[in-house]
Image (cartoon, rainbow, N blue to C red; front, side):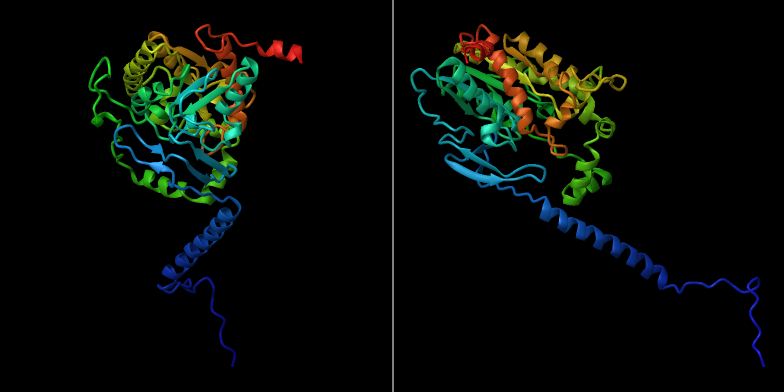
Length: 390
């Protein structure tokens, strides 16, 4: 006797056992995690990084610095292996910080990671290029003492002015980038910073992170995520679009400036003012250099900008502050605006300037130092004359 075939139209749908509602999503999640884990391992193999704090010294008053006569190797995923060597004063300089040799022109540099040329081989940094080329043009040794330290705030730079003056420099450079002003540095004194105490180092308030921010901080440490960002953000339109989604972080690009950024500039004003006054009293010229961020560079080299966005705005504000206090100003914004796809002069995710970017800065700085009548290099033979003689 044949068994009757169940009628599909009347049969009840097959229901998954309750345990499958747990097991199947768990297997899917496990598969995703396994794939991500494999990607992460491969990313760490082919994009290695190494960072060591061997040469770092914490200084609660003047800000972090480096151990004297210390050497360390480091690498970011996007860049080459770099050897950092610090002289007997803890400066990233190839020469001694001792008494200036007769006939030598000495440059002292203040600032943060841009000044220190983080992630750039020494011989390809802007200051090494400037030293070598000006020595050739001026027929005098040119010595550079680089006091720059990553993470240094404007207050930290101000505190090291006297240290820089002790080196008997002929000129002092102070490089500033937008990230140096975030978080804001607030001075208790509205004008003048001569008696700043240790409590005004520019401490950062602990941010109140949202769950989304916490997830972002976790993902940013992933090498696989970094590679994905590196690929996606190489496209200029994608990069500008995503960067402008930031709020305060990108507000230095927007016009008019928000109250928070107006306050940052107001706080920076007396700091640069006192730096300039102290240096001028010693007969030492100060050049303030506003270095574009990667976002500024991308916009500067774009034919159009989003509404209410002006990549020249940050540089104009720094120039206004420098001019107000009699300091010279080096305009890199205009220089980068004439370079096609200037954002390629930066590491895509890390955001620091590459060796090619340092060459652009060095070439512009050399011209500025030769053109400025107060510069110790104003008497040097112009590059064109050297080329004609050769």
